[in-house]
Image (tube, rainbow, N blue to C red; front, top):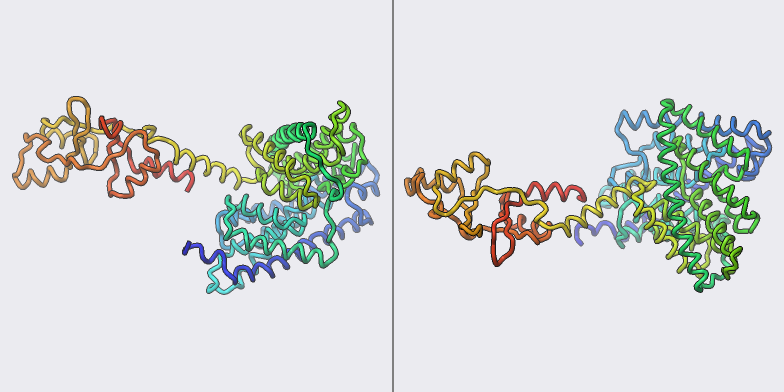
Length: 562
């Protein structure tokens, strides 16, 4: 515990307060810029889904495509800097790798790229650049902190990232959990507390400035759990897992398709043009989808419209993200989930299932798809709870989110966050290391009978390049080892000759491991000695020699999760 003491002290908690305040102001500034662009392009403060109607429909693909083209120029500049200087810009990677700072120039150019995409209607979330800029703000604050505080800059970045996300969704606990769950891969108390404080301060700042209401108005409707609603919850969870897997797969294929266009501006321009074409069918696919979720929860769509919008939004998001538009997937995932939940519940009601208010299932679908896409089910559950302020949804949200994330995990689909895949890979490697048997790493070992000569031992050692030669009896039972250095010393001292039997120089008290021991137990055995190899025996009773276990093979396995 001494080594982690710096992670939780009064200074850290006090720093979390101004970091949370600053992050909330950054997100407000970003919103202001997007609203300014809306006024310049459309002369309206409405969401892009409504504002786009100011222009003739024939111009929509050109407008979204032009925004993508401009976004591509900014992104190309940022990518060139990252490649030349081998920088990591993404705040999650900075936190995960415990880097010194979030790069300023590349973050700003990526933010400009995002503003161009979002302002012109790309189907991406605003939370991505907002949180990135909040993290940058935290990184800049961290640079001015005295070294005597013994606080890593990446810890301040984590506080700012959690606060930025909290400002967007008014969900302080879920935001703190997200950063801990995704970036750290753990939910350690020492790291969660500063994140919760910075997130809470950010939400309090938003409340003070008038942004106090729940994002999605479901607080006054109760969810009644019975057999029918439980059945529908399970169906939504499973279908959301498939929807999340489909979205991840479509994004991957879209990226592969757009990668054929080498120019980033043309790539983003083509993605924007394609989204603009889809917008001709329905402008509700434009933007992040917040306003559309509110309309879905208000019951403004019939089943055909919900289905059409579900398909179009999935395609639009795949095209925007696949063309490398800089933005988030949270709100688009929430919209896809809301549409899916209401579609399934509406179908259930048509089959005369007593499901109650079908609009409540929008929230269940939101949490489930978000959990599937992000592979962070705990965050998804808490975020939807905090956004709806409806505690009756807790149990169905838990069921649907966990089922959806498990479906994606079982389908071996990569997460939209690379660090999540890294955490999963490390977790699986750690599980294998703790549970795999020593028998799986056995290699052959040189062995002689007790009556064979030390000259033969020297020859075998030279051939196999091993310091020790193992000694076994006629039944294959392990008796001990002979050291080549010990043989050489005694031959030079004329205590033995090359024709002497190896049993005269045998060490019968040599450490060993057994085939059914775990790799961790093998690791612990090596920690007690300075040897490169240990003999492997079948069990403590028969002690039959099977081969050797090398320290190198264990280290290579351990590197997969260290």
